[in-house]
Image 1 (cartoon, one colour):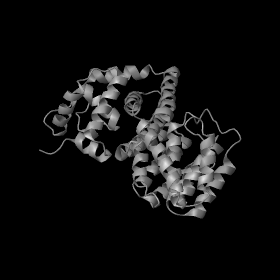
Image 2: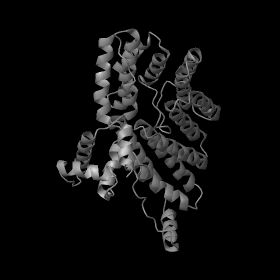
Image 3: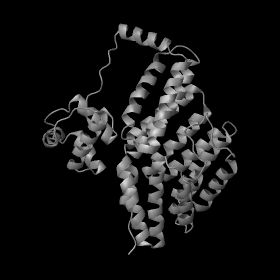
Image 4: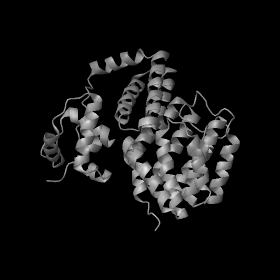
Length: 371
């Protein structure tokens, strides 16, 4: 009998069965959900993974959280939705009740998830976001009122881009791509060039992780073109920096630094925009981004720039700190400083396990320390 998908996913993520049991128990404790004992769970995991028995519904939620995957990706049955005429009338009636206050509530929920993501990563948020996306998408599908559709589509774009980034951080590459495709479609429905440019640029990082560097640079170029003369200086600065990272990955050092210079020039004195709550370029954020590019280019001044940026990074940006630790580990490796490289690699690994940044842990596994 072929192994179940949950076993395939576990091995793709590099998790040992014992670690998965501990994660299931920890996540259940966070949710206050009753679960079987550790010994019983060990036996049950083997039964589930070998396809002898279907995972029961309460445990499906736990697996979605710890693996960052959907029901389909884990081999679980999809939720059943009644599509009879009565259900359609009910959905239309619910959609008609959407008002600006409802949209504001959805937007506030996305913003709350965004704050949680910065501090705790996607373990507890990705499945929650997928549920919210399904809810907003369902309302949008059955909404017939102009104005409401655009507002709902804007919220759907923001929720989908955040879910796309979290899925990418969990190494759920295909899921991440799908989230961004939904985000782009929703941005077009919302009639927002800014949201479309942002989603297009973020999706390019999926291509970078796949090694499709040239295609990623082309998509980042397209994103900047979408925003030209249509977006705020803050978004155009963010897009320039994103383009700079893509160019750095492609080894185009001069072009990458030129893009970061453009980002510096575009960055407004007050880099906070309530209309763009998903953009962070103030404090040390733009400097840490340039530092990442310098690491990829093998530049010696990457260490000084990253160290300075790390000292100025606001405490709540744990995910960003994780990425900077990895960058510093690679930078010190390039400089031949084994002790410093080991220090930052160890710090990064501890934080990465804490917030379950599988993407950065995978990147760290590619680190070869100097002799």
